[in-house]
Length: 389
Image 1 (spheres, rainbow, N blue to C red):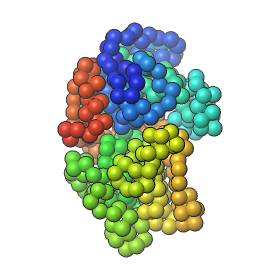
Image 2: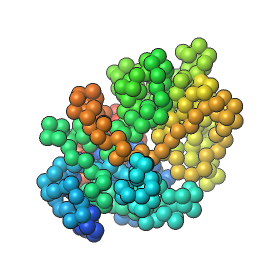
Image 3: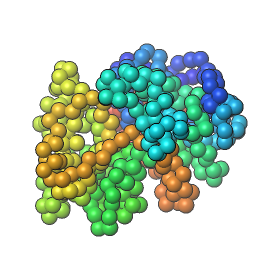
């Protein structure tokens, strides 16, 4: 089959690779009908995610048609149309029973490697390094889905692929980011990053009752899309974000702040963001936490900072003293997608949100390497890429 594979920083290829097959009774194999390039994949493209190996198949936003089912993959049958969560979960361990599927204790065969970096291991993820299981991803013609009795959810015929595809990651992630804020009527939520996850977080914040959403970015197309959802937008290259948020909130700060950027904050945004970039380039740091610092400072006393942007290692000069002395709550996670799937699918079916609004670019797998560059470099107004194998 054809698949997008990683061969080093900036080197994504469309290659012929072995077809997946059933390896366990609980496996299924799907024929991929749509997949997407995620902002998290850009971190891999830029060489920031450790433990990648030449030839690794990328991708963790995938949906398709079931073509083969193991005898233990109950609830699925050949021909079912499904969307696949990026988190791989057994459904039986301590964390899965609590609904924390992204912390599954059984699905990361590289858990000892992950524990050396993070103290313990999260769940295995599709297409996201050998720290997280080395699983083949879904930017391919076919995908093996482990624990298929726990992960995939059937997609109703009335929904298009693009309406359902983002249940695999960015819609649940953006929704979780807003849910973490414990939004009450009348509140102001500030969101850093108007990429795909940020766009979902904006709309989710309004769905959950926010009165005002302040969306922060500098890319015109992203800001316009945020405005179309009703957000007030700030361009961090044109104005001081802290001063403007304080002005807009009468000196109090936003009720909650969402970091939907993560480790690749724009190095032009401030002096500290430039210093972060130099540290990473000279191997004196692992991440660039400018946005997290700013979100903490812009949050009101006893507010919440919600972090869904990806960080991989150790963050420098994060103002924990500000968070402690002002009573902030910090919430963060890799999204336990399975926890959110039924309710978010229901919201799409009811017409409360159509996640396909975010798609700007489409192509086939052969177009994938070039579209990775387009997305990573934010060219041609690219906000979200969908590939159809």
